[in-house]
Amino acid sequence: MPFQTYSPPPPLSSFIAYFWSYTGKNPPHSRRLTLPDGSIDLVIDLYDRKTRIHNRYDSEMTLASSVISGPHTDYYITDSSSERSMIGVHIKPGCAGPLLKLPSIALKDTHVSLDDLWGIVATDLRDELLYSNTVEDRFRILEKYFLLRSDWSRPSHSAVEFAIASFQQSHHPESIANMVEQVNMSAKRFIQIFKDEVGLTPKRFSRLMRFQKAVRLIRKSNNIDWADLAMSCEYYDQSHFIKEFQSFSGLTPTEYRAIESLHPNHIPLTN
Image (cartoon, rainbow, N blue to C red; front, side, top):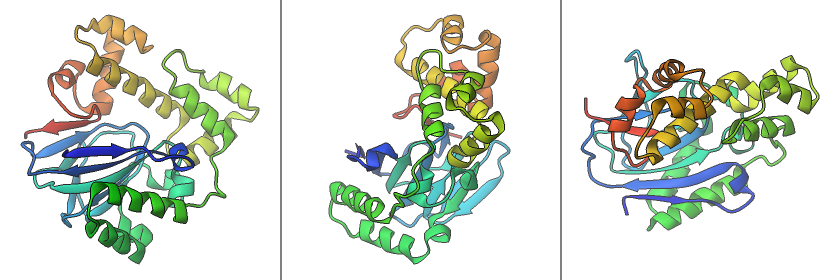
């Protein structure tokens, strides 16, 4: 199988959504659009291919083969024309502290070469992955690495965990004002803690979760009433929904729906 995933058991399951692996020939598309979802991703290219990333203004960044992508408030585009063998870790929002030993705010809207963060450890990890025999072995290597090297003395703040869970609810998440009241702290203190651990303000994260709900509904619906979809995602109206969708993706909802993709947040582009 060209694309495989593995969900680790506790305690890693509280912090890591899944490990993934891709192996295949050059894809038919030359670029890939990545939509923001508040998470952090570690991507290791086992062919030692340089990573080229563009933002919405077409500014290019070239990084080493192993990259950490922080929580983004905007989409970005990656050169995918020569991808052959890659492995990665999809880290849940707000969980960088124990796993990467730094706050998510340090990675906001940026990509960092893993070598710059971990030094020789990043090289050793990549070599161990490269010379393993199977995808399952590679998943076990990553699992062992994070189990041994994570800082379990840095748990997420309970207020942040509560807020993330609320924002990710499918129906009527708590307003920020109600949330501040329930966690029994000042708005300023809550926003600062949330930004440090998640990398985004509560308001921005809430908007992202609403956008992600729309993405999921578009992908699983055969016949879409756009006005109904906008209302179900708690947008003011259809115009507000389209504007927000374009802001986060660079595409209109209808343009997004017309593009086939294996993953709702990774969209192939041909030009």
